[in-house]
Image (tube, rainbow, N blue to C red; front, side, top):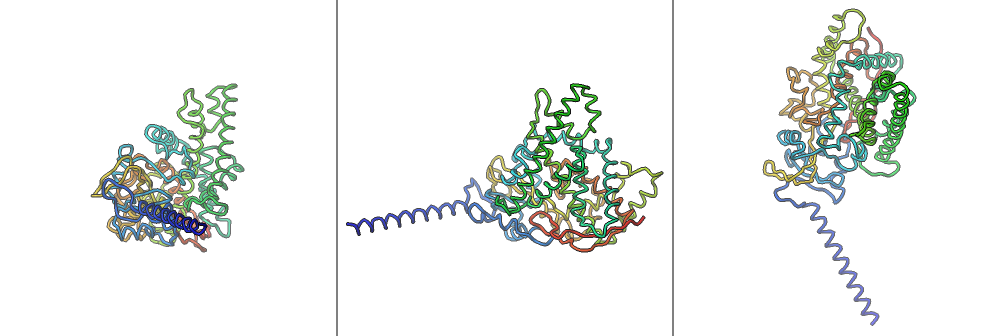
Length: 494
């Protein structure tokens, strides 16, 4: 009897194991063959849960289209499916689909990013807002960083002062790691204009953001020692500082208003962006919550210094590697400088006359491709060129695949600013140029970034000369990085 029960138990265990194996095989089959009411684009969903995430994050020492995308474009064509950090995603290098994604915001698509990325930028960040709320927050930012505000405010003078003082300091040093130096310069300027921070607190906040950026585009594994863990700890530290600053300003405003009135309050504070935020969250019926305000300031600080510093570092390296382009850029700025009357700083008219500079900036950000992907989510089943994008799936528009397409940009890896000559539509974004996004969600800080880059290049080429000392290697991971930095020596020349 005992032997019979043992055999019976063995059979039961075998049947259970077989059932588990069949369930596992079924789950793998379902993962690799998602349900769809039509025909899915070609591609692979990779491993269960992990998908093709590990390949997506694999580094590559090149400015070319990331290997992950390049290999799949060669195999599947301009539209393919994959799975990233647990989400089914359709990747698009098709200009018509990209255009539709940007133009059909709110109808067929909505802004979306994988959960791990949302955790990094905050659940209430502006990218997560939809419809009227997104437009409200966007208009808030444009009131301060839009072209009209930049022209009318002291922003140009403040940028000029930050650039000239930084370059003067760097010229006294034996060597400068440009990426970190430019990041510091841009961050301190942005922190001052956003929050009116004193240098000591700005330094603390800057360190938190540097920690945050190091793990920004990394595999989302929240364990001590990982880049993602460092990123989230950096975010936590930064948010604590921002929370303190917000509460202090609210108390300060309450005290001043009680004793002096709102007009005197506005006069005493410099009119920074935080003042605008305080006005919004202290309204009788506020639309913006404290959490939304904090996430908004966090994203603005991140975007203003991270993207601009990367683009400027790459621009300086590209100019050093292409002396003819540097010579033409120098001629433009020397002409502006010599025509200037007196010792006054750069005027708005001079800034807008920097035509070749604008071409250099556009060509730099085209090659930089700082955003490796722009994400949206399908709101309904969408049929396009015989394929179906199921409702709820992510869509990743891939700027590098467009910016480095030889059909659109001949010799795409060659630094050639004149390819943007006589293309004014580029400044507003187009099907072929999406360095600053596209559609309703084009970058609200684009004008501020271009202003900083233009003024920096003006002072650099008219007053200084520099030489490369080491580093400068670029890596995609999949975002742009300078793993060894870019070390230069800079000296005052004129």
